[in-house]
Length: 634
Image (cartoon, rainbow, N blue to C red):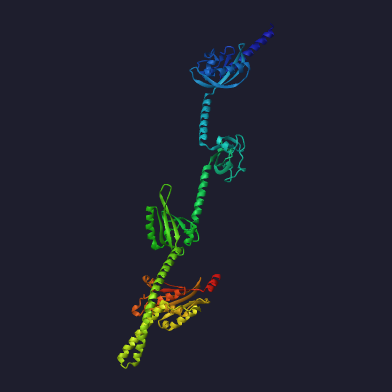
């Protein structure tokens, strides 16, 4: 061999030793484990210190000679053999694989290994490098466990949950979200639900991305199955480690049942409200403090207020007269014991202070737990009923009086007829004897007899008038004219008795069919009664006389400011022979005769009075049929 060839060979060998030394140094100093396995025997023929440390050996020499499968759990050996034999040696594939390994002391660890084919001492071998990923695997398992827990929570919630990126692409969703919205992962969520009816304005996800805060809205949508549902969507921004908003979490809660309940409740309330407002009685809801918290329109109108606001927040007792408030309080206590109290009459007040009769029914109001929270009062205006009762009472009294007068009239007529003949004889003979008498004493006695006989004759005449033995001779007459003539007949007496007469006579009154002398007698009787009452009590007074045309009647009223008529006498003033002036010559036939005359004319006569406030007599005479029809047309 030539000298130059020997030198070149030594130089190559030296370079090879240096290269081997460098690779061995790298092999030995790397922190990852590495060993070389013989392709035929599957035994380790070379290992580094990191391998010994990883598997718990004292030195790399302790690893050499061990079978590769000794480091693999039995359950995983078939997979490892396939990777080494088929992939690495047969196909020369360089793959990264993760699998479990067993250390010298039996611990199982996770390793990440990469294998390549090589030559070692002239034989086919495999170089395997690996690192310990046990901690990473533990963290991944812990992270997966947390993900599983989170998923379990999400699944248990039952709400639709999705995550959208800044472009509204769905990057996560659970099954309820997919079934409700109809979108899949990776699809762009169609914002605004413009093809469906919107329940509220604005998209909560858009708002969350815009201002970085959570937002909630309600929407009505149609699911994949075609079912209409209501969702309450809450969107919250998700930030990265630097605080930048990168996505948005949206939770859709199915509130369909709640909406259905709310709608049913709304319809029920609307129905109750319509019933509440349609009731013809006034309804008030009153709290424990006696304050009105709710009323219907009828209550507002009944009490004369302009609006509900004027009536709300008022005390319920303010609507009752002060004299009835203690009665209300007592009845409320009774209602609380019984649960309700119905049909109690009170005197109620209007906004302007005027009074009207009312009937209250009260029911205790309790909450769902049965606790007393107030009461409901139903008020009814019974003015018309009271007027009807008064009218019925008056008609009953009038009927009773008419029957009595008819019976007494028959008796009076008979008595008057029987007495009239003897009285005529007494008057005639007493007058003849007076003319013949020469004795002053006898003449005086005869004058007394004649005077008393005349008085008896007047009583008989009143009885005949009362009994109405003469049919009235009616003709068209003007009531104002008849009234003026009656006043002229009493003008002197009224003036001397200090009675001021004020007349308020309606002009253009239609003439009606009456017996003028009889009606004049009625007016004179009423004027005389008023004159006597005022003169004897006050030594004078004021008499106000009015005429008015009403529907179908002409009404004449006489109002004095005398002492008034006691309540116990009001029902008797038209009774025959009833008088409070018997000691002053009263016969009690004047007003009875008036009643008979007015009744005979198809009219009415009645009196209203309170002690100390005078009296008012009213006479109502019917219009003739023609005038009544004309009045109705006008």
